[in-house]
Image 1 (spheres, rainbow, N blue to C red):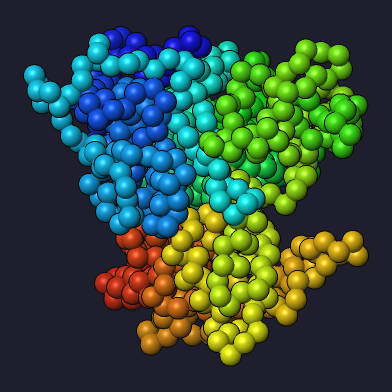
Image 2 (tube, rainbow, N blue to C red):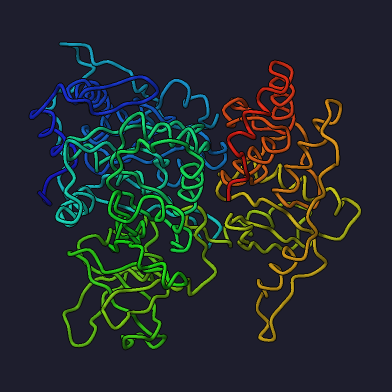
Length: 623
């Protein structure tokens, strides 16, 4: 089926069982027949507007059934979708639109409000219906059908030049991802998948099509719920999810919620797939002790957007805890090959670290309108007298063991993987130096007890207009207004100069030591009614480890707080006040003031009751 398009194969599933449930989202369900009909109506309108194979179409939708309808409708019209996350700031969305020269954007009514005012594209509502017998639609048999070699999507990754770059991915590269792994996973119509990740992260490609190509059911996880591990655990139980895909960072939070869950776990999971970032096997200790390594199976899949989501396969077993310092990524998928090359470009022997080069059917076209970068990263060469083959140079360092499997060692450059997103620090540094009060900027990743966050060190410009004390808050607002959440530093530190190594390079380790040496915030002794805001502020300050407490009315995620940090904040608030808050009580307002108000509302409504219940359930901070 490698020569067919994704939506052609989806059509097979529609014909097989149109009444089967395809998508579940926030109480709404769509059968395969209903999803197909709604996507067809949208495709007809898009084709009338000029969408055909090779045409890029923006997709702006919050997580829900309409997102899946919009994506499928774009593909049915022959186009390729460009994710435009409505949670991105307008300047970022505008750049993505300009970079792709998109002229049509499919959007839900709510997401359309987030599109930039300077939008030079037509907005087509997801819910638009094609009127029967009218000229505003193009029937399927009159549309130019996309084939396996046509584009399916363009996903942007962080760029070292300061701007994100679009990766061009074809239908056939996604289709073969599932045919190549069929024997390992045996996906089928009985599987229930979650759509946990943003469509701007290619892990979502695996989730969406893993369900829809095999007749399974896709459960769309609301963004707010995704930040609440206990609620996610409940969703997995209620929906009887069988296939869960997680970055290791996200799974650490879920595993902590699983450990807190009392009684039978109620999980139907048969498979957990890790991807997006380095897996630390030691973090799975508690999960493996509770569940073993057979039900569910745990599989680590190393992957790169440029090689279509996943490139390797490695089952994780309890025996891996004997060598927890290793990060095993296993063997390449059956239709891919790995080469480890040394600095001279020649293959290295087993046991010697080398750069990982990937070749085979998953290697994508390259970068949108970046021929020089494409030529640099996608190379054509021969190794060991073999055939001349196109490879993707990953920039990742790995080593092959005696038994033939690979272990991940890290990066050859400064590129970072944070919560599944590949990040070029230079992109953020370039943006920060665009601030009139910043002369130099360096961004590093720092591990706060398992919570990997970005920290920015800036050297201020000298002059009367520069206020070093006010600069961190100004930069937090500056980044919140233009950068996606995963690119925002959680802390901005003002320094007199950037430390250098003896070789004259930026000493990033020295900068991390500055963070290590910072004293922790001290919580106040009392938590009485008049000091609730003070206590909550101190808890947030302690978890976020900033140089000063956050403002009460600033969204914590705008300041660079991670989902794990948010979970820890809620857990510490519960422990301090004897409550059982989940974080859902805050709604869309994740601020210190709102959290303090929730504490006061809950304690006023049920004085003493929540506290007793919390202690009965041994509330504790999640790791």
